[in-house]
Amino acid sequence: MWSHLDLGLPETKAELAELIDCDPGEIALNRNSTEGLCTAIFGIPLAAGDQVVISPWDYPSVRAAWCGARSARASRSSRPTTT
Image (cartoon, rainbow, N blue to C red; front, side):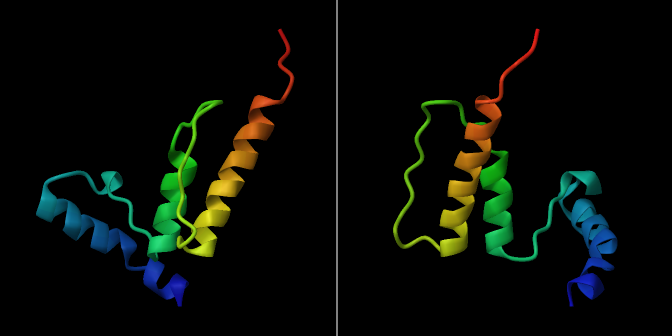
């Protein structure tokens, strides 16, 4: 199903870009809200010590994304650096 819908993305982006007067490359379309939230979660530049408050009523996939983002950042920050 997604592969069929993805074929129409360039045309959809072009039409939206014309409507809002921007470049089609500036438009990001996600398949659903979970994909959109996960894209945003992994794009937030959190630093050591930053805290994020999430609700116990958030979707499990979104809660998992926050936990995954925390793990990914922890592993990146704990890697030894070479000079």
